[in-house]
Length: 263
Image (cartoon, rainbow, N blue to C red; front, side, top):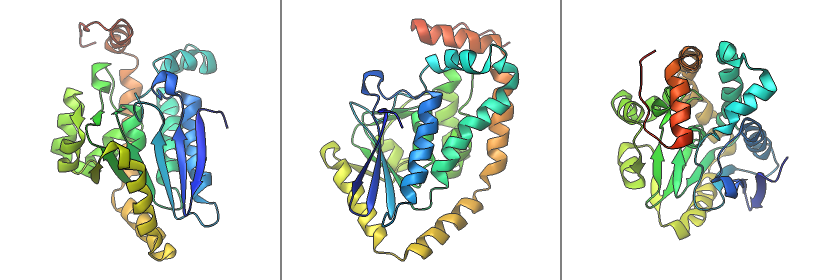
C-alpha cells in the first residue's frame, strides 16, 4: 500500500486515512483500489467493530483527479472510452468493497467532499460532517454523471427529488443542509469530528456483532443497488464519448465556462 492511504488503530475502530494532502486528496484509479482494499482488510481484523474513513489536510477529498483520465489512456489505451462500461465497473468494484465491509463504516467529512470523494462517503454506512463542510456531485458540469454509485446511493439515501436537485445543478450544499436532507447523520465541530466518530464506533461496539452484521446486509439488500449501478455504467459509457464531455474537461482544466453543444 502506498503512503497515500494510511491505516491506524484506535481501540475497536480501524481508521483508514486519505493522505494525498498536496492534491487535496484527489483520487486516482490506483488510489481508489487501495481504499477499497484497505477498508475491506481493516474490517476483517480481529477486534475491529467499525472502520472510520477520514482525510488528512484541509478537506476530505476534492474528488477524482482529472489526470486520472490521462492515466486511463496510459493504462487502458486511447480507446478506453468505447469500453467505458467495463471501466466504470472497475471503479464501482472498489466502492462496492467499501460498502460490503464486514463491519459498519463511518465517513468523517470536513472541509470539502466533492464528486468521487462524496461517492466514497456514500458507500459508507454512516457519515459525520464537520460544521461548514461543503458537499457536491459536480459531474454534470463535466458532461457526465456520478457513476461510481453516487447516483444510485444518493437517491436511496435522500430520495429522488433531492438527488435530482444535487445532481442536476452540480451545486454544493453545506453540512447543515446535508444533515437536514439526511445526507449526513450528524454535524459536529471540526475539532471534535474524530472524537465523535470514535464515540459512535464505540457505541456500535456495544451491540452484538452478528446482529449488526446481519442488519447491515439486510438493509443493503433492500436498496436493490445492483441495477442502479449497471444503469450508471451504461449511461456513462455513452456520455464519455460526447463532445460535451471533451469540452467539460477542457473547461475544468482551464477554469473557464463550458459552451455545451448537446452532442
